[in-house]
Length: 89
View (cartoon, rainbow, N blue to C red):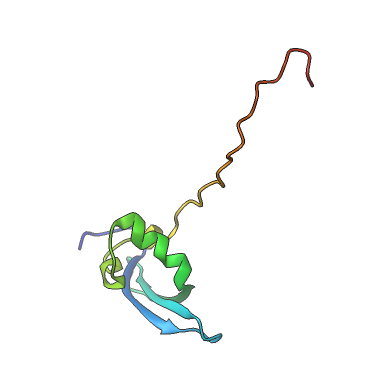
């Protein structure tokens, strides 16, 4: 594992949420050795796994926590826009 200046994931596992839905328990470790747990909805972690090309939560261990911050794609606009005519406001 390489040194990171940002927190690194040291644990990732699926756990039951208080509402009965699956959540992912993540523990990150800061460069000073402090650790912090967090819980994320399972649906929020799936895109990160896809982006990394991995299928297991264990594959997140050693990655910087920022791999979980993915940009949300803009909704597709299937309507073709016609160019505005001259003089149109």
